[in-house]
Amino acid sequence: MNIAIGCDHAALEAKREIVEYLKSLEHVMLDEGTHSLKSCDYPDFAAAVSRKVQAGSAERGILICGTGIGMSIAANRFKGVRAALCYTEELAELSRLHNDANVLCLGARTQSVDSMKSIVLRWLTTEWEGERHGSRLNKIESNSRGQDAE
Ligand code: RB5
Image (cartoon, rainbow, N blue to C red; front, side, top):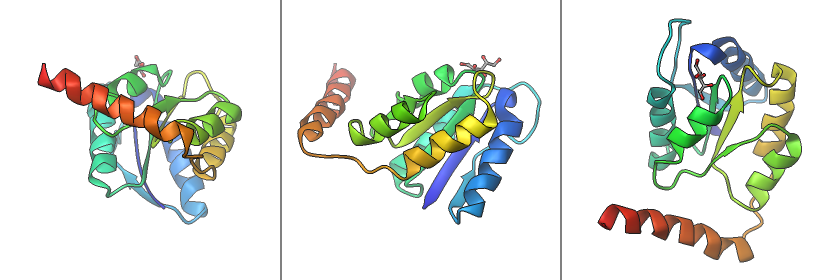
């Protein structure tokens, strides 16, 4: 699977480990930065990954900052992006089953890398259930279009 990944300075090492882990599982990783420990702004990387998901050049996105909160807020501003901040495998699974989350947000200061790896694996291997959830996702999309028109 093509996966875009981004982080800020708080999550550089965690991102490197997740990239290596997912490459070892034969995923194609599009690393959108940051690439240094210099303090930076997480919305820039949330935007880069979200645009790849919007364009379809990445099937999924992963965003890691200190808590994952800033990344999730920033990514969810992009139409078509359904970003979920998941601290457990169960939440990761539910974000796929019910919400068809296409971006996973993680917190490098609040989760261990081992826990992130198992969360990412569950998230990547769970399919959306569809059916009753479809109309709910359509409402999310039409709500954001409505706001743009006002
Ligand atoms: C950076 O210090 C920190 O604010 C950021 O990584 C993130 O946790 C924001 O939500």
